[in-house]
Structure formats: structure tokens, C-alpha cells
Image (cartoon, rainbow, N blue to C red; front, side, top):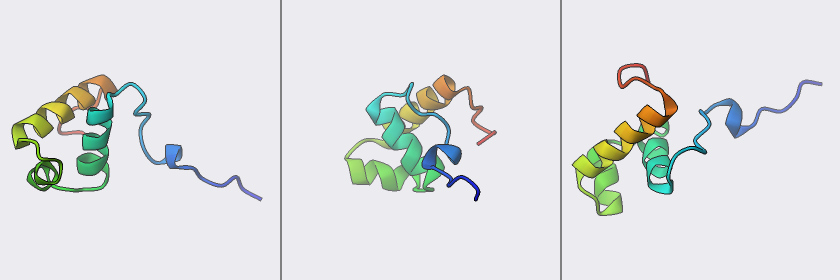
Length: 67
């Protein structure tokens, strides 16, 4: 019987990110929530979300156009 897949099998290792970076990355890059929508949900400016995503992508070594 094959081994059951886990969440870690489908998303990158986000352990190097801060909580804010991890939450923003999951919401926008993994779950597909728009930056503006996520910024409204979290009472942050869209630029702040963009900065969190940029730092997360740098830490994960993911190019902006690659994801």
C-alpha cells in the first residue's frame, strides 16, 4: 500500500519564514488570494503584503516569475 501524502509533499518548506511572511505566502501564492484582498483581510497596505512576499520568495529562492 502506498504511503499517504502529507501537506509537506505539496508546498515548499516555509520554516525559514517569519509568521507574517508564511501567512502571506500561503494566502497569496499557494491559496490564490489576491494581494489587495489579503491586505484588506489583514488590515495591511498592499505594499506591505508585496514586501512580505518578496522577502519570502528571496528566502525560498523562488524567482517572482517562477511561482
